[in-house]
Amino acid sequence: MAMLELGNLASALAPFNVSAVSVGLGANSQESGLVVTLELFFAAISSLYFGTSQYKGRNLGLIGSFMVMICYYLCSVASDVSQITIIKAFSGLGCGMLIASGHSILASSQDPNRTYAVFTLFSSIMAALLIYISSSWIEDGGHQSYFFNFIYIYLALTLFFFLSQQTGHKYIDQIKQSIDKKLVYFLLIMAVLLYEIPSSGMWAFMERFGVQYLDMSVSEVGSAIAIAIILSLIGPVFIGIFGNKIRRKETILFCLFVSSICVYAIFGVPSIDTFYYGNIIWNIVFVIMVILILAAAADIDPTGRLGAWLNACILLSASLAPAVFGWVMLENEMTVIYPYLLVFLFIAMVCILNTKKELEPIDKV
Image (cartoon, rainbow, N blue to C red; front, side, top):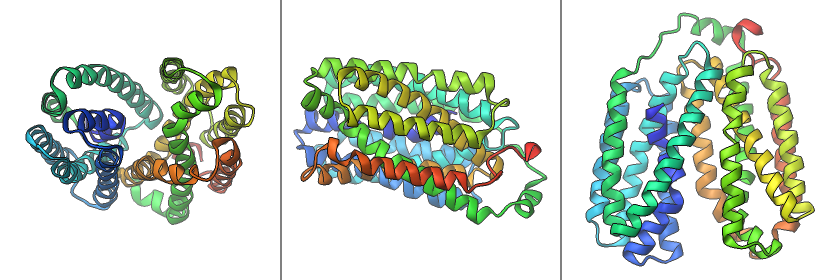
């Protein structure tokens, strides 16, 4: 869990990475956005590569964490935005190592439903705490303090790596013989991409939508989003209690259907009420769906390769979707393009529907 959290911190802290570079070095929005985009992009590419490699686990996680710590130190002494941009690209490579290694260990769990539910809960709490703390670092010491202090965070969580164990699976060959992995891989990857692209784009412009279309203040939008994130913790609690009593495929399809209703409510009939309740429900079902998909990936591929690939798809969407949506919204409004989001979600449903029984645990197929 510590490996995955450190690997995905680049995504959770993206707004504050932008702020640190903007405040400390006076970077414009394009320059600061490129810093985030490159780090997430290289994290995705790295996790794709090391997800297929045999060299993953605790040792690769230690190398990745050490690489990120060096990059954070170099960022703390950098005096130019272009320097930080290059350094962050290398930091992304280290994050990818951490992501691939974390999934290789979590995927070997005997109960991936609860394992990924606990990880999501741990990740949400850690991200909220670090976001709260990091904002004060930027205010007190600019980018130097912000980047340098994260060295201690990485060092502290890296100590937990020595407690990790990767369980061997004797039945991997049986899994390969019982299902068509290539088709399942393709369907899951497409489903995640098709859901994450509109989700990441929506998330990036959610604040602007509330302010510009609903006349909400920035603080009101922030309050709504904060409440939605807090209540999304219902997701891992739900999976922790009912994870082994529900069918993954039907639950994921239900979450996609509810997500479609939320998209329509938020953007099709925009109001303050639909903005609040739509965001809350959307965040809850999003978390439930991600947990179940990662748990299914762990059962399909206990080596963690598929989990790392799906994580990479999420990072790619987080890095590219905001730019794509920004370009689209130069000519259109969010209230006009939301039907296209529904098309993405519908195709994702078709992908999940065609997985047959492969999403269920082996002993329930």
